[in-house]
Image (cartoon, rainbow, N blue to C red; front, side, top):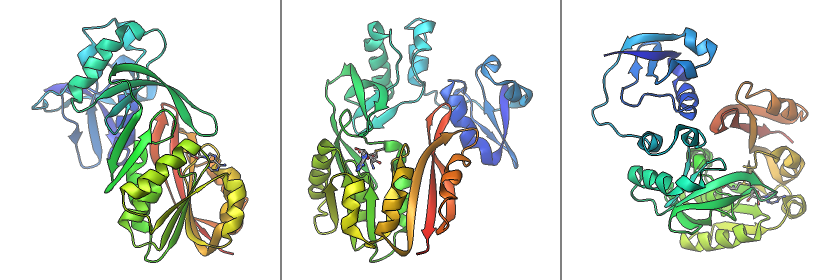
Amino acid sequence: MLKECLKVKKEDTQKKIVELKEKNNIDSNYIIKKGNRYCYIPIKDKQKLTTKQKQVTIKKEVKKQKKQNKNFKEILEKKIPKNILDKINQSYDIVGDIVILGIKDGCEKYYENIGKAIKQVHPQIKSILNKKEHHGVFRTQFLDFVYGEDRRETIVKENNVRIKTDVENVFCSTRLSSERKRISKLVKKNEDVCVFFAGAGPFCLCVGKNTFAKSVYGFELNPIAINYFKENIKLNKLENKVFCVFGDVSLIYKNYKEKFDRIVMPHPTCSEEFIKEALYCLKDKGTIHFYKFVSKEKPFEKAEKILKKYSNIKIENKKIVCSYSPSVVEVVYDLKIRK
Ligand SMILES: C[S@@+](CC[C@H](N)C(=O)[O-])C[C@H]1O[C@@H](n2cnc3c(N)ncnc32)[C@H](O)[C@@H]1O
């Protein structure tokens, strides 16, 4: 079947899929065609593309999907008005058995329809909520109840661990699950590892369970998060290896001079304010994993400006970890330190 497709370089395919998904502009009735150097992504509406993208759309022979799995917005298309549908983000988070949507104000009348559409796609989901922006130092979020069970507590299963959390009062992003796995693979036998900004413990638990690290410490300021973190250490039987410390990194760090081989800093809005503390706690030749929110257009400019100020820091690796919003992505830098 000849179909309008966006032609993209093979290495850019994932990035372009994310961009098109955000605009609900992939025609999932068709299969993405893979060539030697290019991929062809079937699109729904050429008008929704940028001027640059319009220039690289071509009609291409693509196959129909065998089974047509509609996404929740496609299910809703005939059930709610178009102006309401446009107020609902295409992407959403699944945290345990809870779905967290991004719906703008003014759609409350349609919450039941929206919830039922999500349940149709994910029958195992028990509770559907709607998020406002992350806010404050704890990076927590206000959540509206949409459909199903009105609760906030859930258990996330990932990377051989279980993470109990409260999605309203504790920050916990499942978008970082593969990143946690990547970090675990880098940890060597007998390392002392620390996670600044540990939340309910997802990074610490993953490293504790899946590596031969000697110890894994997590520093966290949110009292609700630290209670979940304590419970999660027991839940995963990691009492002899993972340790949570309640308090502000800018105060606690003094007790850990040159204690760690590796420090993870998953606080993308303010990690840079704690580099001095991380350097103090690291052994010579230690590693820092540094996270930052940056613009999708120029992802590696901003963080490098910050890191260049430190002559003893060498960038060993950098990559985009996940998309945060249509214009913002999260990047990670793996940094080697010389004392
Ligand atoms: C973006 S969240 C990351 C949580 C967790 N590591 C994860 O990946 O799900 C940042 C966390 O840092 C904590 N935090 C913020 N400022 C802090 C500080 N000065 N000292 C310790 N923890 C802090 C917040 O409460 C929040 O749980």
